[in-house]
Structures are given as C-alpha cells and as structure tokens.
Image 1 (tube, rainbow, N blue to C red):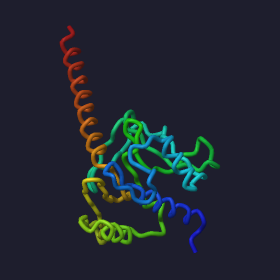
Image 2: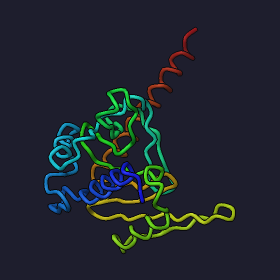
Image 3: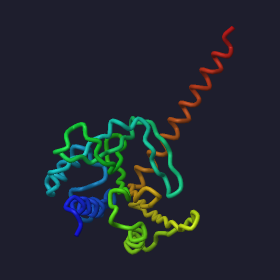
Image 4: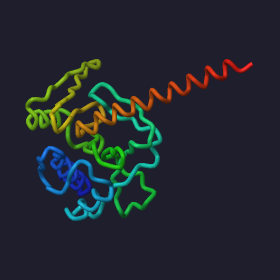
Length: 206
C-alpha cells in the first residue's frame, strides 16, 4: 500500500499532466487550466479543484536555471524573464524549498516537469511506455550506459512538446518554449558582445 503522501503526489502528477492542452482550443481535464496563466491564476485553479493544501511560487534559490531543451541537451539560463516554479505545502511555511514543478516566462506558465525522484514507485520503463501509448507518434531512444539500458521519449506536436531525460518528464507549450530559447540566445549573444567590447576598450587604455 502506497503511503498517503505518495497517493497525493500521484494525484497531482496526473491532474496537472492531464491539464496541459492549451492555446490550440483544446483543453483536457480542467477547462480553466491553461498555459499562459500567471502564478496567481494557477493557484486559484488549484484551490478550486481541491488542491488547497499546496500552492505554487517562484523558486528564489535558483539564480541560474538549468532548463532541458531536448532529451540530451540542456541550457543554463540566468533567472530574470525565466523563473522556476516550485510546489510547496502550505503547512511547510514560506521558507520551504518545495519541489520543482514547472517554468514561467514573462510571468506565465509554459512548462511543466515531473521529476522521477518525486514518483519513486513508478519505473522509467513504465513512464516511457505510458507516454508512447498516449503519444503514439513519439519516438523512443535507447542509450547504453555500461550494462544498463536507458530509454528516452520525445514527442513534438503542434500544441505540445514532451520528452524525458535522466531526471524526469518535461512538457512545454511549443510557441512559448521556442520564443524563450530564441530570445535568451539573443540576450546571451548581446551579453557576450558587450563583454568583448569592454575587453577591447580596456586593452586600448594606455
């Protein structure tokens, strides 16, 4: 028998996952739960749907956010327009670290994550199989690490991008996800150009 905390976590896992169809006119699960909601709006939805024991907030401890971009590639992005969202028990207090549950860009939800360590009773193989059944057009990749074989899943749809890596399952709204990557790459290029320009100016100083 699973402990009560595990059952609650599993419920939240499936509840939030089933709600991630938006911006396309398709809404599964709860009609009012959409990509693009602010943290305040997300908390209002959670409260209405019976998850009053939890709330979402920005993770202030993450100055640099490591965001997976594909099953095999990640990027570290400076906190600013991009923030990590954590799920916290109300009874744990405002200082609780909580658990990573998603990402917002310009204050609005565009990504969800379910880390494997948060669902230890479920195997990666079972999760991969379930994703393949739900998204039959998705691809399963197998990587060999010593005697162990690790499977990764990836599905790219017009309305949803889903993939797994060694840490968990990631769900992104493609338009906002691609915009985030494009704008952050541009910002990083501008920062590098500024550093190089400052270095050249310092080199010219007698």
